[in-house]
Image (cartoon, rainbow, N blue to C red):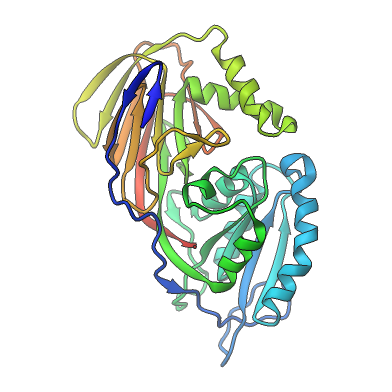
Length: 334
């Protein structure tokens, strides 16, 4: 149920099963050096797990929690895995780390932190509009995505019904069950494609996210501050949308438009309550209305160029944009 400006809209859930574990991860990679992932044949190879950690996440508390967690993680995995720790040095570094890990044949890349770190790791699974591939073309295994939620927000983990408990996350990684999930793709008039796993949004909510990113030092309070700042001098805007390659439609006086691959954004707000990251489509909420879609194009009526766009809490610029879904393109350790 969505309550928006006093109006209630009810959407029936589609594909109610959220994530189904399909198969255990292969545990057959061997290497003694976590700084360089190695291929090559052997009778028994250990799993290479690359943990991507943002040392500045949650005002530095992420790396503190990670340091406390690391001894438990090493003891839990023992000799079964090579634990490769990669600390990011700045924006987009997690993307580069992930791409290199996949090319070198890692069994999994695990995002350690909040939704911002997860967002970059997901984008690292792609390059130049295509999924990143292992350098070894004869390799049969693919790199899975893992999550240890430690950051300011863990909205994607909420969709999956996971507790915000890193020890639970480590148990999931140890079991190694995987399921394919969808990823959203955003394209504009120029520039590379951008990818998201959670929620993309337009106008007021995107503007609130843009301002909230300036106040991350206040924890989840940053979302409240961002929302208050976004409401100041806000004006509804007429937009044009095209759903699933249909005809353009005019949506008048839009306050916000949210495109959900998952359910939550903004530190726990359930904006697209029936979205399912393994359904093959989005839930699209426009004010108090909703739609199901595999793709949606949105552009401003007029030429102000002032309608904000974000995905997974990351500011992407302004309209126009096209949002397409890539069904089952990543395997998630679940």
